[in-house]
Length: 161
Image 1 (tube, helix red, strand yellow):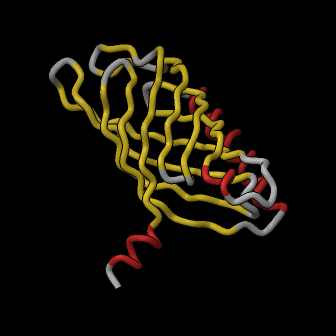
Image 2 (tube, helix red, strand yellow):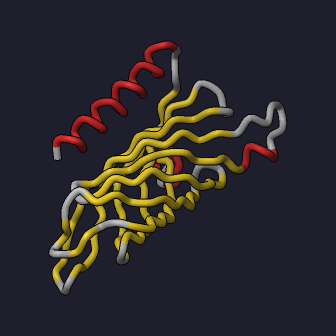
């Protein structure tokens, strides 16, 4: 558990130092998704998206993974940090997709990940999870796959005007 706290502290310090250098725009998003980590989990949460230009975008998120392990319902809190990359300049069509490099951590595992996102709204990522502890007697390690829908809160607000 101590290693998890140290990793989160270092990751937070890294992202905060990046954001201190320049003025970034922040956008809020709700997330709904599916995670496979030795079994299936549903995911509900939120993310903050930080950008100065649209070539490199930073995201921080927190969510809850919910699923059943050995016939027992389980909820795991999840923290994640992503960097979205697309270095095509002055071409709008190429900014429809971004490459994702990031990491996620729960109280049961830590997983670096890579993937792709369409408009920053539909994410497909994969990685490998390293276990911290067991979930109802099951070790959370191995292949990690995430499919996430990120819904900007501006879109929700405008929908109900």
